[in-house]
Length: 453
Ligand code: FCB
Image (cartoon, rainbow, N blue to C red):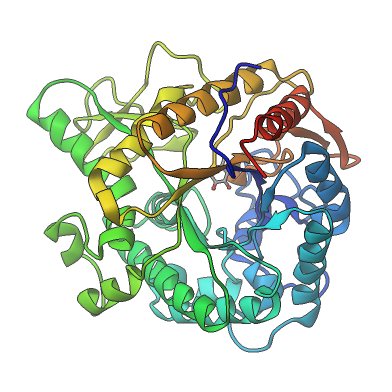
C-alpha cells in the first residue's frame, strides 16, 4: 500500500447525490425538479433515463451494505428538496421525509455517519419556474426546507452540508445554459450566486435553530494557472479565479466579495446579506477535480469547448488545454498536486478564519468497467497530495471520494463513470470494481495504523 498514514480520527467516506442516483422521480409523492424538466426536454446527451437513476431509492440498503463492506466512516448523500417539499414551499411530503429517515437509520445501524447535503442542484420545478436562484425568495424557501429536514433528522445526523457547488450552478445553469435551468445569461447570472450564498447562510441559521450541529458547505475549488505572460492573460486568469473560487469562498469565510466590481453586481441589501452568509461554520468542504489553465480571451489556442461545454466567444477570458498530464475520460487533466496547491492556497488566504476542511468530493471518470487501474492510480495520487497538504499544516479532517457507484453525470448521462461500484443500467446490478477493493484495503490499513477510530 503506497498511501501514507493519515492523522488519528481522519474520516473516510464516499459521496453521491439524489438526482444522480435515486430514480423514482415521480413516485412516493415527489414533485418534479428543474433537472427532471431539463432531462425531459432532451438535454441529457446520451438520453440516459434519469427517472430511473441507479435505482438508489429502491436499493439503498444494498448500497449501504456496500459502504459497510468498504469500512467507510461516512456517507455524503443529498436530500431531494422536491421529494420533501414537492412545491418548493408549502406542504411537506411525509413519504419523502420517511425515505431519508429510513436511509439515516440504515446508515446508523451499520455504524456509518450520515452526512446529508440539502441542495445538490435539484431545485423544485415551481421555484425554478418562478426564477430559481435569480429570485431572492428561493433562498428563504430553502431555509424553511432545511429546517424541516433538520427537525426530523438532527437527532441522528451528526454532519450537515448546506449546498453543493454554487459556482457550477451559477456558471453552468445560469450563465452558459449547459445545466438546468438552462439559462444563458452570462454575467447577468451573478444574482444566482448571491442568492445561493444567502440560502446557505439562512440555511445554517435554520439548521441550528432546529438542533443541527457540525455544519459545512461543499465548494468546488480549482487552482487557476495563468496561460501566457501578457497582461491580458493575467487579467483573464485573475477574473476566472475570482468567479470560480473566491466569489464563493470569500463571502462564506470572510463576509466580503473579492472585489467591489463583483459586489456591485449583486442584488439586495448586500452588506446585510454578507453578515448572514458568513455565519461561522464548523467546517468547510472542498470539491477538487483538476486545475484550470486560463488566459486572454479569444486567443487562437483558447478552447471553444471545455468538458463538453461550449464556451461563448464573448467571455473575457479563454480556457486553454492543460498539456503534459494524463486525462480522465472527461478530458480533465490528472494533477494530484493541484489538490495540495488548492488546500495550501485556502490556508494562506484565510489563515485563522479557515475552519477545519473536509474533501467533500474527489474522483475521476474512467471507462474501465471493473478493472479500473486508472481510478486506483488517480485516488492514490490524490491521497498522497492530500497527506502532503496536511504535512504543510493544513487542517483536513476527512476525505469523501466521488462516488460510491457510477451514476448519472448530469448532462453527460450514464457514460461518464465515477463509481467505485459499476452499475449495469439495464439491470441496475451493482458490481464492485477493483478500486472498491483498493479503497477498502486503504481504509483497513489506516485503521490498523491507528489513523481512524
Ligand atoms: C461535481 C458535482 C458532482 C459530480 C462531479 C463529477 O461538480 O458536484 O455531482 O457530478 O462533479
